[in-house]
Image 1 (cartoon, rainbow, N blue to C red):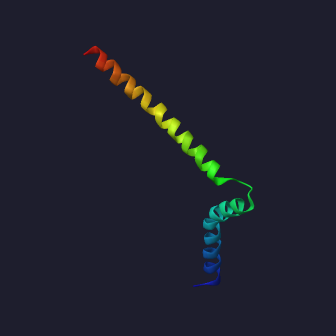
Image 2 (spheres, one colour):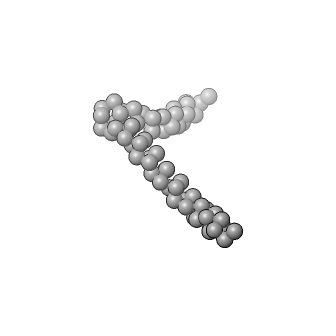
Image 3 (cartoon, helix red, strand yellow):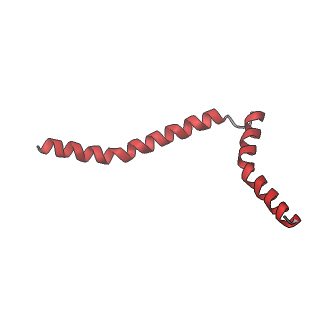
Length: 67
């Protein structure tokens, strides 16, 4: 393996690890409360899922009332 290839591999490894390092650093320093972020994203996901299901169940209710 050439020196250039080793440098490229090392750079790619650093780039791939940087999100995890960033999360660990901000969590360890207290800059970001990741449990709150996870809670908010979970709540947002749940609301979006409910909004996607409303039209489906509205149609099912209309069909049921017609019978």
